[in-house]
Length: 389
Image (cartoon, rainbow, N blue to C red):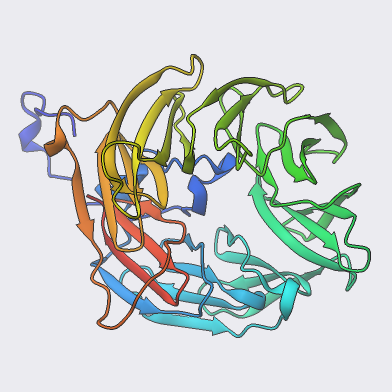
């Protein structure tokens, strides 16, 4: 809010609270920056009629997308469950179809009133209201198993591995509104998950980070240092490289994918990067006796690499930005701090999920934040929704 109202403004009727009117994608959308922006904490962006809920889903569900009325959660083998955003009630469900290597849960690409899920047979479009299949875009064929997908500008980018030779890969770009394949690029190694951002598609191929032009699929750069996954800062085009052998996060330039600096050591979660260039990671906590499953939250400046602040003993599976808060979570608890840094220990707020008796969660999935609510899939077969502290 703006604090005080302008003089004389009290005569105007108070506007009715709005409700969520947009899609909220996992990983904070573009570039997998894990930044949910101001809509993450602004009450106006909460689903209409929402209150905390818990829902049982297929095991393996790790990331969901939120539309104004439904939370769409792909599971293993091309299965999908849609839950009411307000109450968690099952709206519709598509059973799994895949086996083995082909069955990892995929990125839920939601655009408007349609959910696009990549499964063993290609990309399937479902109506969010009823779960009816609207269209199917065939995949590259049975020799190829999907490895990962990402959405950018209405285009779904997918990486595949060749199940026959297990030495080569493929990246495809499919425009979702009409199902047209825009390009397909062969790779000379095994790819991991793609990340689209700043006009590029970044793919870890074997041990190298590779950048493709998002419009043409042509390779524009290949780095020399190992990178197991990426986060892209859309504003600067900087690429953050994680899952490195030494446990740090490297900041790469966008043109040549050369390392400019590294952030942290023993990084276990993150990085999340905010539009203004704040970077948050969770590192192994070195202070005193380590508490099992806890870490230290460290916030850096992207351009200088300078550490801004850190706090010990936080839940250690996930880290995000939402508005002016930095949010950390594990399978049982969500905690948040002012992104500018806590003035003291009392500056952190926490919320514990009400998990059913006898349910034990091993790990947290990818949190979504919208309107001061969080939606958290637990891959053991539950989705919980509660307050963003």
